[in-house]
Image (cartoon, rainbow, N blue to C red; front, side, top):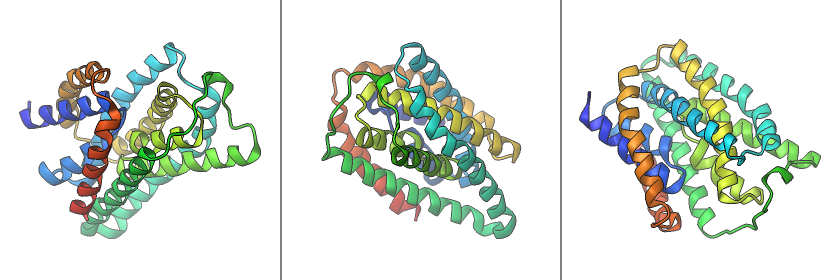
Length: 257
């Protein structure tokens, strides 16, 4: 057991419990920058780690009725094929680029982090209205259906390439575009992300990009971290934490570049 990795899992888990986002966005760059994990292994291991944690979260949200199945379905139409395309591109990069592949993937992670930080900052200054009924919301118009499919595709592709994008990019977009309450947006985000990271994690596993001892150490730390963060969530407003999280994402992006 690696104490440093366990502590990292605990910190990331606590942040996820506090803010509902930031897991992969912090985990992947920290593994690359401070633990000397190859970018492709960091991404693959993070995706398998997320498949476990998001799967548990998806079951919980489905049970408590905070998942809009219609919205998840339209997101998945774009997201699942895009995640497969992202895995294919990852394999192509390593076949064609050789030694420069890790540097290229590291820069892709940096771009995803910059996007996530920018969206979090924008979200701080925009408070959309909220809808009371999670089942009443569905992209019924053709324009909204197309937009939802594209949004799912962009997130699915980004997640499969970088492991960043489910909580840090999709969640703020759900709050901005749809009139979902926070719990409903988190439910949709986690359920959709569980599908995407399962597909992407399987692709990385088949490509040999997963370090299972690393995943196990992260899970050991993250479970108590999420529990603690969830308890503190009622005492510490996430709005007070999001500016710091956004700045951290941008700083990690610049460091990776």
